[in-house]
Amino acid sequence: MTRTLTQQPLTTRGLCKLAGITLCGVLSCMAVALIYNAALFRNADPEAFRLAMICAVVVPTILGGPLFVFLSLKLRELRVLNRRLEIVAAHDGLTTLLNRRAFTERVEARLESMATDGLAGALFLIDADFFKSINDRYGHATGDRALKAIALRLQDSVREGDIIGRLGGEEFGVLLADVDRLASIQIAERMREAVATMELASPEGKPVPVSVSIGGVIFDRPVGYSYLYQEADNRLYEAKARGRNRVVVRDTAPAAAAAAAPDRVSA
Image (cartoon, rainbow, N blue to C red; front, side, top):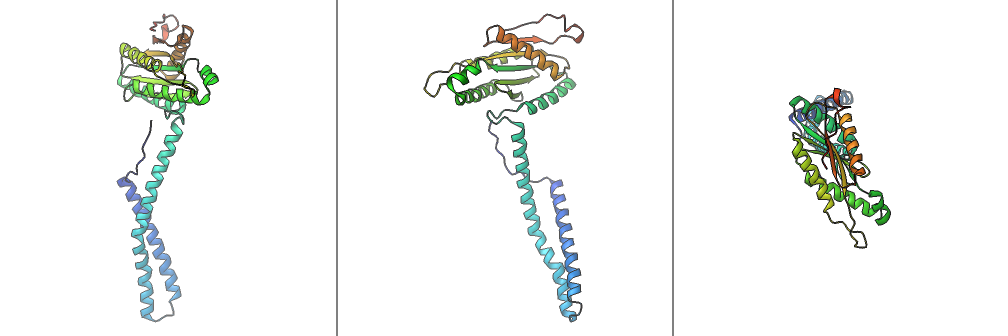
């Protein structure tokens, strides 16, 4: 996920604040110059004194325009730098996906808005199968390539607006919003198949088999992220126990019946 940063123009409010700062700077310089010249030329003839006072007013005024332009350019640069730092802080350095903290924050915010709008959704946890073996057998460089390739396949499999992140190691998370049960499972299967069918080779040119296990929870009522994460993690564990390279999901149950409600599993 490559992000291009451009220098965006300052807002009207920002320009007004900058103009105010520039004006204050010009007036301050003018006041200092007037006081200094008045003291310096107090014994000079009237014409020299008058010219000194004029210069004390004109010079800061002339310099005010270039100062305003200079400050506006520096503020633009600062905005771009701040934006770049925000992106770096929120994204995983290897895959460029959201990191765990940013993913959690965005999912929690999206869940709140979904609860307000009454939207259904699904949370999936995706884990690369036998990833330690890939690192041990083919090297960490190949493992990193596998993670980047998995991230790309997952991105290509979800919809625009879905939230996807790398939660750590070989684990990824995906939140689908405004989607029913059937569509959720179809997207999860699409992610699994996209990874299972991708081609990855070792430095020696040997094919490296890669697959993922996916656990998910589908919900149609307001529910917290911690609950969804735990349920999805349980389903992920089940997917691995049942042979890996598969999808296992369950639907949320009413809180009072959650402990007794049977799991509805799709693989």
